[in-house]
Image (cartoon, rainbow, N blue to C red):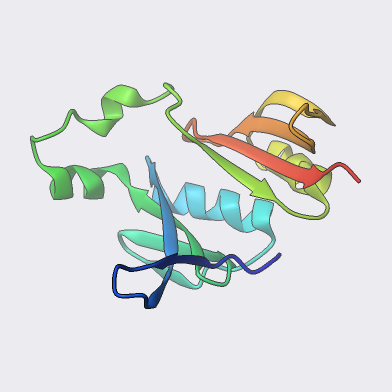
Length: 144
């Protein structure tokens, strides 16, 4: 995987480097951890009750948090995230070599295929699926 580094210039002219964490709310942390371990072909860098983290690239982390944990954090201010189960609001779009292999592993690990690997008009070859929690998952590689 390539290095992902997010930078921006602050008002004072200094450069700040940001680490990006993308956290998916999951019904069962153990099940989701096993799924992403099989799909990504890597061990989590952190796996404790309440959070699992996979380092996708430098400064880019995929987190898995039990949905009950986020409910405790947000309280009653927002609707219960369980109400949105099955309603896609975002996708995890991973651009990497061997995208077809990752997509195939996702299907073998229990993902539901939404769209087979095919050229897309934005310049990638990509396939889409749903992970066991209903998150949209895409694997892509640029068209040569």
